[in-house]
Length: 296
Ligand code: HSE
Image (cartoon, rainbow, N blue to C red; front, side, top):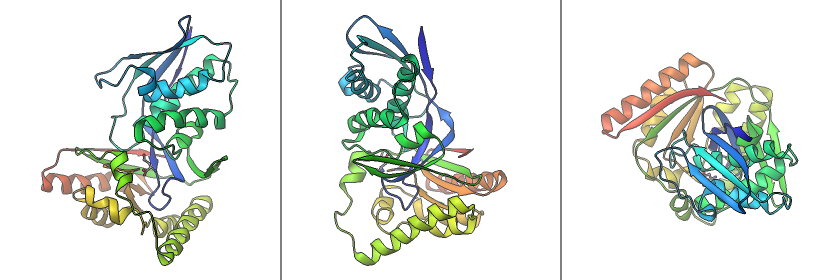
């Protein structure tokens, strides 16, 4: 007998909340099945064409499951069968889905003995394999659903944030941006005036979500610290933002460390118009792309 999880794609940062805010998309979702094994350790079977590592320590799901196994002395080994639907490297939390889905499925198998916070803790070991740093802004929304605030990771303090209905348009230009590189280029110091603007936006965004105030959400989707540095890695970024807003989007920006760009809209029809605007930009620039419209 095994247990299955369908972890969804997620959008980290939500523009101004670098490493502390994220939300889950309704789709796409991966499919991960976990089985008990008599062989010690974690065994990975990839059931897709992505050629991901099968050595547990080097595999995002494997590293997360090893962390879980460390705290389950009664379990000898686990076998994971992973089917990736969320394209690795697209910037919508593919690695987090692998890490989170594996431990969520394992937890079902083990009669839900672990809390969601425990699962986030295990899954972060997987995220470290993917990007070199433990961050939870994709993992937490993947495990908790909806919008989440990671107030702190040491100690872990995750807060679920209420949000009004929001439609999400995502464009994935077919270029490669490695999270590790996109973190490497960031400045280590910020100016006080930028910090003040940024925390005003973060507080405004969270307040906007909780109050269901779409205008406040739109005004707060501004990032003066990370986006100006990272957006140079994404051709067409400024134009996508401009045309998306003209098409009616509330706002948006880089999804996680990119290269995908997301935009939030109040209704599905606007989100569709936004996808047309995005398509127009990448068709003109001549970069292959993929757009999709979903919701939080
Ligand atoms: N918060 C992380 C970053 C998310 O922006 O580097 C990466 O998936």
